[in-house]
Length: 465
Image (cartoon, rainbow, N blue to C red; front, side, top):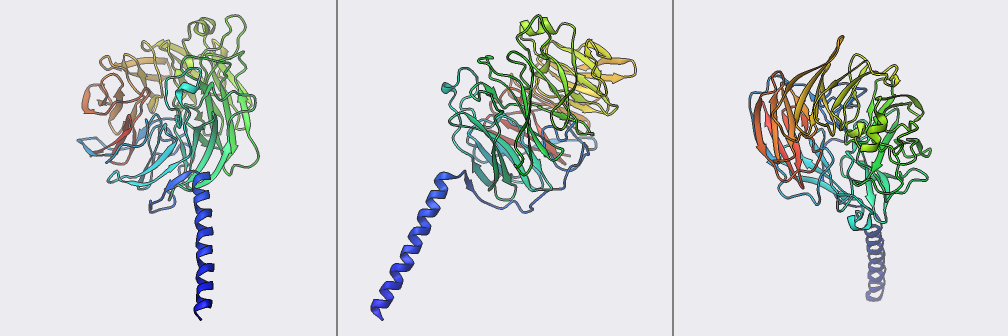
């Protein structure tokens, strides 16, 4: 009996050891997840551009309206800041689904935080980010997750693009409940050099696809191009891609990324190309089909001088208006009103107007009123039958991308590291909150009764009533 018992113990120990070795191998070969529980596998789905109680994509819906419907905001107070800093800078806008806030960092980590307390529900690290010293230019170090992810609420999946060492981009699908990896797909377009392509623009979910935009690094080094890449949500079927037909440049780099119309067509804005003679689709608004075929374009008459001066029209993503028009503004500060049914080609705008000294990021929209993030403050622009008109302007500050909760327009002052709230009707400042050191193009997010913003590597939550 003693001999038999000894044999059994040896076998059990061997099984345990083999299992342990297998577990260790998995830990070192797979993205690392620290599990917890979110509670519900999915939050209510957002279809089309409908308003719901969740913030599952950049500026809430595919039109990038940035509107959280609410009554009059009477008061605002700090609810929480994340108990400990997340593991890297946060360039992506926070997302909200059910009872969790999702945050992505430049250390290639995704966090799920408790929406009520800020406590960490889970963290998944997707790999090693790319050191800035290994890239030919750029101003993010390390470079990991920069573009805002997108959540498929019905499928219980968060899609995110990580920039991994050695330099390459991978699309991951994460389980909303525990952060486990459901899929991973290499997402660099064929022929592109990932060391000079930056994935800064927000991902979009439409047509059963995840769409990923690309632009260049700060400094415009290398032979990069603007791209949009699409892949089915289950990761099968290969990639579809559109390349801006410039000799080089023409990046699609605005943090707001891709705007998607109700019919499934995609609208993007490009930065400067390198041609000053032949039109190259730099400094343009492009309409793409769901399969990424070019359907139409707009460019201002001075596209060539914008190209030569690095004055990107595409520093802001297109704003889709509910009447079928499109508003576009960029570094030059000139606003253009376009028809979505026919962008009009060169000089094909319905109207244009001087808005400000230059705009960057994403707009917010209430009806036909657009709020533009300018280097000299927030500006209200109204689109109507007579064209465009400028309404109120705030005082001079470097405005991050705005959003709207009820009757307050919110934006981060990049220069002073403050979250500011302005009266929707008059532009008068109502609220101010100090943040940690914020990154460029920082944008708040919202949910019913809650306002969220990342300050560097800290996340802040505010309650409003």
